Structure formats: C-alpha cells, structure tokens
Length: 240
Ligand SMILES: [Zn+2]
Ligand SMILES: [Zn+2]
Image 1 (cartoon, rainbow, N blue to C red):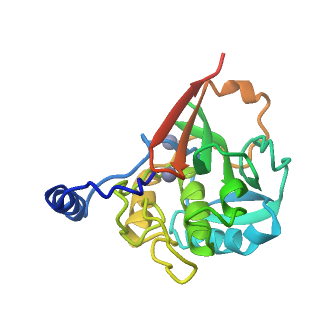
Image 2: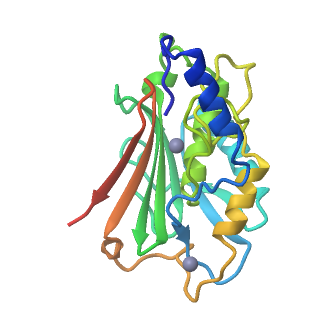
C-alpha cells in the first residue's frame, strides 16, 4: 500500500528510498514461492468475471496483459461467485467488484494454498472508493492499476516496490492521480521475468482447473491488501 500525505518525508529519506528502489533490478518479488501446480507451461488460468460494468474493460486489459507472460495465459469466463461475497472456485480465480465498505483497501487478493501450491484465488475490487467521487484517487487509471496488481498476486507475485514511487509496473504502490496518469497500470518486463522464474520447474500434479474434492485441503489462506490510506496490510489467515 501507499502512504499519501507524507509531507514530512525528508529529502534525505526520499533520496535514500529512491536509491534503495533503483538499485535492485534483479530483485525477486515472488510471493513466498507460492504458485499454481502444473505439469507444463504455458498453463491457462480461468478468471471468473464477477465485476460490474465499469470494471469489465479493465478486466479484459489485465487478462490480456498477464497473458503476455511466456508461462501462463488467462481467459475470462462467466463468474462463479456472488460479487459481494466472492467465494472461491477450485482451480481458478474469481474476480469480483462490489462496495465492500470503508475497509481501508482498494483491492484484495486472496489465495488458498496446499503447501506452496495455489489451489484457488479471489480478487476483490472495492467500489466503495471507486464509486465515490470524494475519494482522491477515484479514476480509471488507479482502477486499472488495482485490478492488474491483485490479479498478479493470484499468480504468486509480490510487490516490486511499496514506497509509492512509480516503477511503471502495476506491482507497485504508486497512486494514479487522474485517468490520463497511466503509469503503473500494466505489468513490466520484470514481472514477466519473475513469473518465468517462479514457474521454471514442472510439478507432477496440477491445481489449475481442478474441481477440488474438498476446499478443506487448503489449510491456509494468505491475503495482501492494497490500502486506500497508505498502510501495508499482509494478512495470513489460518483455517481450522
Ligand atoms: Zn511446484
Ligand atoms: Zn498488492
């Protein structure tokens, strides 16, 4: 998440941040090695469309963007969830939008794991902020940034940067200031390179497209939230 209203950041601190961010071109932003199990590449992940009309074209753009990856493709299919609840469907990702309330997050990606293998995922885009004209970053570029990032998380990608500057990847925490401020609304080459690294190995089983016998196989879910007010929230939920 990005922090806005950081007027007290000193020049020295800002420069240090820029230096720290600019240096590691080879940085790794895998999300703890989480990945879909599959026996070969490229694999095709279904994205269930549970978004409202204002998000439809953005979902298409994000799906096309991520499909540029050499290791995976995404395809948009009819949604299997009620948007407000956004329950997961085994073997795929449900992408939802609804007014989830004043939660502090613009979007949330949640993945269910079996070991390090992702078994299902959800993305929630929060229309509480994007439907609200009073929200500072209520614009289509920020929406594209959010939906691109949250879908990216469901492949096992983390953030490239959380300082708030733009690295011109949707996996950063820049805040788009208007519809014409379109930096950071698409993946960059480093995201594709990271996906190739994450998915360099083959598994002997697959979790893609599987209609799980029991979602209860997944013992843990992990969430990364993108905040409207700047705090970074990484939530680990352990299920009984
Ligand atoms: Zn594996
Ligand atoms: Zn994120």
